[in-house]
Amino acid sequence: MNRSEFIKLSSIGGCGLVLPSFSMLSKVTSKGKKVIVIGAGAAGAMAAQTLLKNGHEVVILEARNRIGGRINTNNDWGVNLELGANWISWASDPNNLVAQLKDKVGLETSLTSYSSVKIFNRNGERISKIGTGITGLRAENRVHRFFENKDVSREDLPWGNVVDSLMNYNNGSDAKKARLDVVKLGNSVSAGSDSYRISGYGYGTYDSEQKADEQLVLNGYNQVIKYLLTDADVRLNQEVVEIKDLGKEVNITTKTNKYSADYVIVTVPISLLQQKKIKFIPELPDSKQESFSKMPMGLFNKAFMEFSDKFWHGDPHFFAFQKEMLKNSGIVFNYHAYSKKPILVAFHIGESGKWLENNSNAEIKKHWQETFAKSYPRKDIEFERVLTSKWFQEPFSNGSYSSIGIGTSEADVQYMASPVGRIHFAGEATSYHGHGYVHGAMDTGLREAKRIMNY
Image (cartoon, rainbow, N blue to C red; front, side):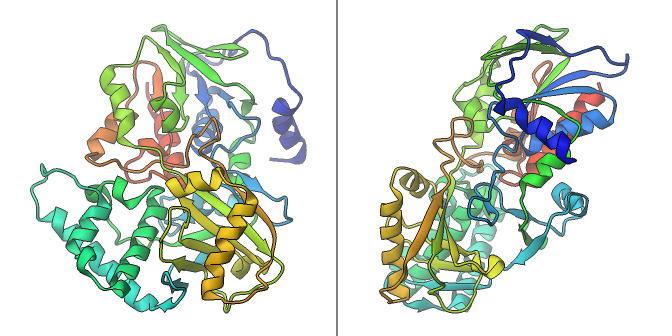
C-alpha cells in the first residue's frame, strides 16, 4: 500500500464520511459475485483480498474507526507496542499464511524462546527452569495418555483439573506446586483463559510434534492488514446491526447505512455473536446459535511498563512468577531483549485481565513494584509510564480470542463455521486447530472466500 492509498483508507472514518443511505454494490461481470465482509481484521482482510484477486466485488464494513481488529499496533512510546497480536506463531509451517506474507509485507521479526526464562516462587526465590520444564513435559504426557487411553465418549474435563489430579498437585511439595503453577500459567496464556475453564481433551491431545516457533513482529503487525487491504473498499465506523437473507440477495443494515450483496461473510469476534449483537433475519437455527458457545471468548490483556533503567539481571525473554493472587498475571515478557528499552510486558489473563482494566495505573505500578521487589530487592525500581490494553471493555471485541470449551469437538466447530444460506462465518473462533492465532483467522477468511467462489 502506498502512502496516498493508506491516507485514503484511514481517512474514511476520521473525516466522518457520510455514505448514501442505501449502497448497492455496482454490477460486475456475470461470473463475479458481490460480497460484503463484516470486519477488517485478519479473517476479513484475507477474505477480501482473495475475492478481489479473483474478480469479485467486495465492500468491507468495519465498526471501529481503524482497520486491524484484534491487531492493534501502538507507537506512542516511539517503539511498536502490540496491544493485540504480537507473534507469528507456528512460523515454520509452510502453510502458515502470515509467514508466507512476511517478506512481501517487509515484516522484521525475531525468534522468541520459551526456554529463555527466569522463574520465581511466591517468596521471590529462583526456581529451576529445567525442573519446571521436566514437570511440564510430564504433565503434558500424562494428560495426553489419559485421554488417548479412554473411550472417546468419556466426559471432557477441565485441563487444569486433569493436571492437578494426574500430577497429585494437592499433596505435592511447595516446590512442585510452584512448578505446576507456572505450567498452568503458560497454558492459560496459550488459551487466553484460565486453565480450569478449557477443554482437557482439546488441549491435552493437541498435536505438538510440529515446531511451535514464535516470531516476534518488531516493526508493526498492522502492516499485514494494510497490505491485504491495499485495494479494498473499507467503510469504517459501520457497526452492523442486522443481516437479512432474502434468498436471492443479502441486505445488511448498519447504524447509519444499508447495503446489499450476493453474499456476506461475518468475521466479528465470537463474543458478539454470543451476545446477539447482530440481528439475523430469518433467525439463525437454535442449534447454530448454541454452537457459538462452544468456543468461549478469552481475555488476554497486557500491561506495558517502562522503567527509568533496567533493574533486572540478564536478558531472558520471559519472567514467570508463581501465581498467588488474582491480579498477579505471573508471566512477564522482557521487551528489553528486543528493543533495548527498559520495558516489561505483563500478561494478564482472564479475571486478572479484568482486574487490569478496572484499576488505575497507580495501582498497577504498586502491585508490580511489590512483585518485582521480592525477586530484585532494590528500592529504586522506578516506573516511567504504564500502558494497558482493555480488550474486555472494547465494545467490538469484548475479549481477546477464543478457547476450546469443555466438551467441544472438532465437529462442533465445523458446524459453527458452516454457512446459513447466503450468510458465511469466519474468524479465529471458527477454526478448531487455528483458534487464537492470526494465521488461523486468515485461514478461515480464505476458506469462506473459496467457498463462495465455488458456488
